[in-house]
Length: 222
Image 1: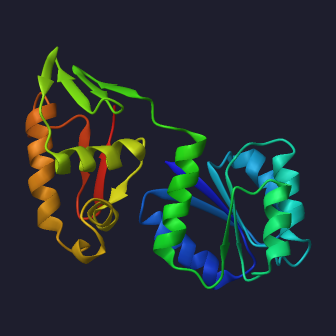
Image 2: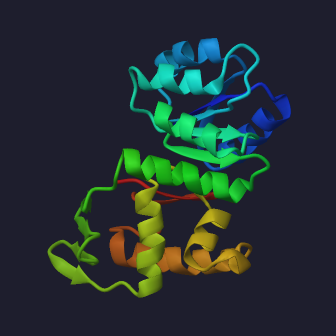
C-alpha cells in the first residue's frame, strides 16, 4: 500500500485527504507540526509527502528543506500562499510540485500520481506469469504468441500498470480512459476487464493479475 504523509494543522483538510486518499488505496499518516515531520517520515517511509507552508511551529519551506536533506521522497506543497516568491522558495528548497488552496481533489490526486510515476517509473517491459507487456512497443505476448489488444483495452491496462499494484478506483479509471463524463459508467469496466482477463489470464474466472476490489476498483499485480 502506498503511504502518504500529510503535514498540515487543519483537521478538516487532513480528514478530507485521509478519506479521499484512503478510498483510493493509500495509507495516510499525518502530523500538524513541522518539527515532527522528518521524524515521522523516517519512521514510516512514505512514498509521498504533502506539506502546508503555514504550520504553527515552523515554515513549511523549512520542512521541505529538512526532508530533502536526507530523502528523495516526492514532496507536494499544498498552501493558501499563491505569491510567486512563495512558490519559488518552496521549489528551490526541494519541493516537486506546488498546489494552491482551495484546490480540486481530482487535480491533487493527479499530481500525487504524477509524482509517484516520476519517482518510480514503470519498467518498459512488465512480466506477469506467461505474459510479457512491452509498453514502449505497445505489444503483448502470452506464452510466446502475440496478443491483440484494442486501443481501449490498452488504455485500461496502461492505467493499471502505472499504478504499480495500487488500487485504482472505478471512478479514476473511468475518467482516465473515457473522460469525466463517464465517471459513473461502471458497466464499461466490467466489459473491458472481462475482455482483458480472457486475453491475459490463464484462468479468467480466478484471475491472478487483473484483480477486482468489489465495489471499489481494480489493481494489477505482476
